Image (cartoon, rainbow, N blue to C red):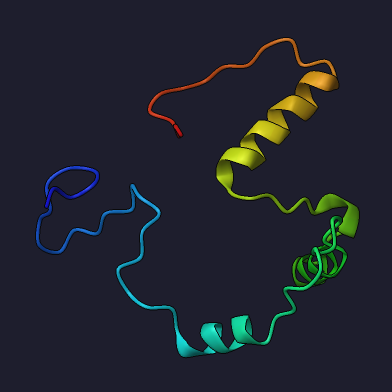
Length: 97
């Protein structure tokens, strides 16, 4: 089987893919079993934003949860564009999705 990201070498971890060859820890499985799947989650992530803000000592309005780096980067650039950003410089190597 070919390894994603290139050749597999001993002692090298491949972080180029979002794959985990290990099972989740037991406590994660128990947390998932205890979740309520009968309703949609809070669209505004109220509790999550409050917990992250409290942990980092920042204002809740400054916390924007996203579904990963790609969404966060896209949302940041769109916000900057709406605020009047006329251009930007992208250096290489960089993140790509």
